[in-house]
Length: 634
Ligand code: CUK
Ligand code: CUA
Ligand code: CA
Image 1 (cartoon, helix red, strand yellow):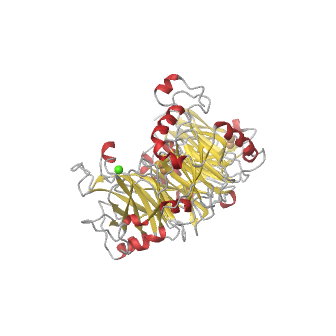
Image 2 (image 1 turned 90 degrees about the vertical axis):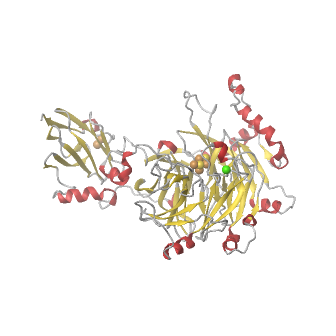
Image 3 (image 1 turned 135 degrees about the vertical axis):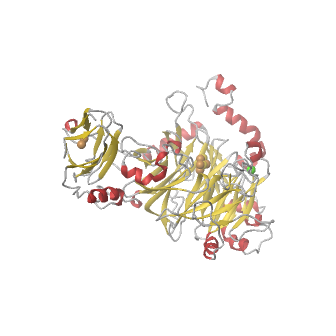
């Protein structure tokens, strides 16, 4: 199967064969169920792929059926792809700095980044689209930043980030999901790592009761943190139900350990379930604390002396679970086993009884625990009663029937495994079209594979990842496309193209550049007409318009050491005529799209003549779209 693998790779156990060999041994125990489905060979899926190639091909001039939003992982951006072509349409810089658009350089983006503009890195994992009545409403996309504990919002009408919030008193925002019904009021996000409180360097022990992490809810409109809930253990992934009452999160570090061995000590970790209206009730009743300088209400969701809190329940599941997915029918929270070959199905309709104290054992709500294969990480749904789970170690996607798995748990002899498809290699997330909504349509599935190994032309030691497109519209999964991606999407989300409505040109009243408009107003400037230089001490503001192929000002004069702010308003009204502004040798670059105002501030620290030019090819005379900054020596 892997003819071009070197012996060296095989010895290191890193080849495809090596991985398979390892799983074949340990997989023997689960072989009874594992082999029940149709196992595809390389030959059979190649043949199957041929059939579906026509479906994937989006001919020149045609448009994709779906928008896909891909996390850019530790690269920090969001990428927009068309599905099924898997062509990259756009990049939305968020936690990174982007030289083309000027994200992280312009005043507008720095205003949005706020305090955290000092960080030039990010690590995003989970992009999710806002919902109304359990369906994507196309308004916003939210994404986490694990690296600097932030949550960002992207406006999908302009496909720009418009708000970023740093979550206080926690470290590493990881799992992130949205309220589905009645609409996305809250963005729920997990702080993964346990830290001491206060984290002032006096205590470093994690076993102390003042060491904990928190579950966080951000108001989707204001992007302010609405509340935090202290939990036992740590938090990995999360999702919400379709009633608006419960959310759930996986915990892999119930041990509160700080090393690998310690985190695997317990036979079981848990899924923690939150009763959101109960949290709101606690806050209303004043039963909360605050931490440090933060005003955010904090509710304690930990067990006290073995007794449950008013807002949480802990459901034991096999050790170190990872993904947490709500089935599209709203019936189950599915916790993915990772170290266990199983997924745990939690019946959401039994949770009210669990909270009401009517159940003997929290495990009573686990109504299915199908054995799927090695390393289940994430699960998605096709709207036809099937679930699809990634098997990291087996390098497969396994398709299984949800209700049959429930019946099997009760002892019935049913073969819930429908198919196992090889993917290449080691998949993390997977995502089916519309799968997080009640409209899951079972057409396309993307498996986000962590290793590409031999699938693409070699690119040196650093390899791309491999996002594979799988046709799930029929009874059999068919692999139809390999998509190389740069570091590391983790997760993606797909919406029907009619669910996303974008603007063609900017609205002059757009809040995105409102602070700049306010500044111009103070300076008595009409942005749409004026080409003027305003001086205030050593601060100089250069206002100009742009219209292909010329800037409103082709020269301006400042003094060495001046802090210069260039504000440009693009008066072009024609779709797609974006201009740029680059001041040579000053690290200055930005985008100004039709009807947009953009601004950037820098110090004119070198005397002499300095050219500026337009960086987006806008006109036959684009090269001539230039000007000069003349800096007089101090
Ligand atoms: S996590 Cu990366 S594969 Cu951050 Cu959603 Cu599971
Ligand atoms: Cu304006 Cu190029
Ligand atoms: Ca553990």
